[in-house]
Amino acid sequence: MSIYKAIDHAVNILFQKSAGKKIAIYPFGEIGIKAKEILNWRYGWKESLIVDNALSTVNPKIFSFEQVNNPSEYIWLLATINTNVHNEILYSIKDLVPAEQIVDIYAYLYKDKRGQSRCYSKEYRLLSKIGEPGRNNDFCREFLELIEKKKNERRIISVAEIGVDIGATAVEVCKRLQQKDTYYAFDFDYIVEDLLYDLKRVPGICCNLVGKGNSSRYYDSYGWSLSELLFEMRNNNENGMFDIVYLDGSHSFIHDGLTCCLLKELIKPEGYLVFDDVFWTYEKSPSSNPNVNPKMKELFTDEQLCDCQVQRVLNAFMITDKRFKEICMSSSLNPERVVYRKCNIATDQ
Image 1: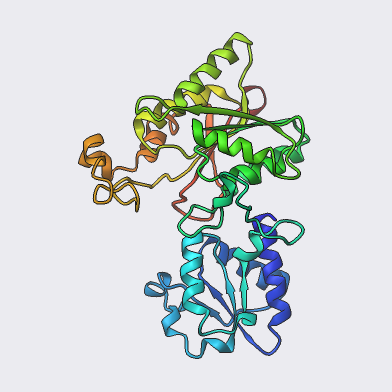
Image 2 (image 1 turned 120 degrees about the horizontal axis):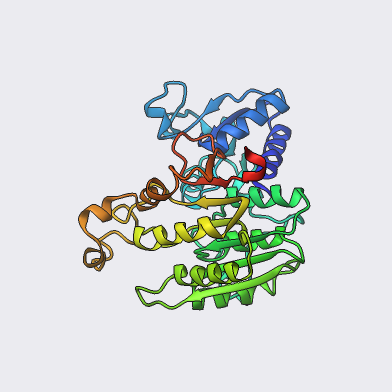
């Protein structure tokens, strides 16, 4: 189920349950804003309360959860798809509000078209980790929307994901691709091997699967694999190889700077580059900060640990390249993901 459909479905359920009850939306980020729009404009219904612990400190019309008197008087729309935020909110509310008065967008999103859970059994090497606490269970909405856009144009497409983690995005991507489409996975070789093993066993996945794994040696990376593809593309006199690429790799300038330069050549005209974690830093990472992982102090200077290195890549290689145009796919003023479209000289002039 797409994110929009999950929100719409949840709001529909909320509307059905809300007779005689007041409605509260919690929290009020991008998903909450979209849910409010659907509730107000499509159903003509007005929420009674907007709850967001962070925004309550700057907006007097928004409340923190602690400020809500008698929370059981409301039907609650939990409006987040971020796993960590979702789990924290659900834990804080479930003992104070009856389960039948909670409508959870996250729960609908993580079910397939038959209403079954998106969790995978232990026979899957990598995908079985989806849904585990502390894992990055979210998928890249922008990547999926761009794929759906290309497929709506009835195109055969080739897409790539760089940094597949536990496969939460990969499996949703491949469900949207068709038999002649191709999905490329870039990561450490053992992760790529497990991912492709799993994807071949997921019912309904029929696209071509190509794995490009690299070793764990520090100076080896997906950049090397991409350079090989670049040489192959040139030998075949092709003007681009990928329609959409999602870069969620090491987040280091030394690796992703090179990768960005390679991808700019590998992306087709009218193709898209999606950059993740633009404002991510090693210093603030729960798993990579030097207090948890002292080795980071040996690999990076203090300035590099505190720097948003993906943003540095964009500033160095993207913002002045007239072949690429940044497109807006988020209502946030500072989105964590930034998307660029490669211009088609023949049609964009």
